[in-house]
Length: 215
Image 1 (cartoon, helix red, strand yellow):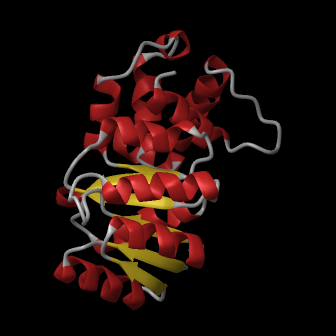
Image 2 (cartoon, helix red, strand yellow):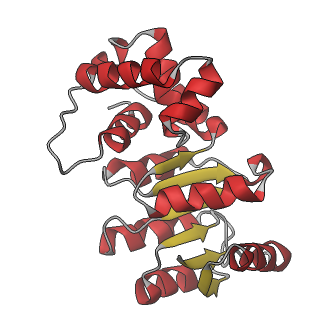
């Protein structure tokens, strides 16, 4: 994959570059400020970008706003936010366009290189990779959704793990259910959320976006 890394802390930025290159990926550019992040995203058009939220010059939300601006100009540009903070408003805005290719992880939650690279690959492929802590924060501030209220408790569990980016097999292992049982639950979820298989949309991504947007 061609990857952009936007992180202002040298040790973390250099560590990510070395890690990604060790996994056979190409880091085509790095950025250390919000404006620089936007510039390299637009010029490099990477397969996926890792972007911090708080970057110079203000150390507020420069990186996340650069990611939003880039996705407005390049719809569907895959972005994995890696931060110490959950910015609920901007996170919802990232999810709102319904195109997928979005991930949001807290730095403190990344314990494994394989986990991190796997999340990047899912995002690059148009999927989602959401930190459970980010999911919880988004859901705690969301509005009610009658379609979501139709789901059983088990279906909520399955959909939450789908939002993390887990496959049916991995969800089954987590919930101690067979893969076929998870498949039945996902089919039921799609039906209750009104998500049809038209051959163009990724139903898993649409279900997750519905879940996280609570709209």
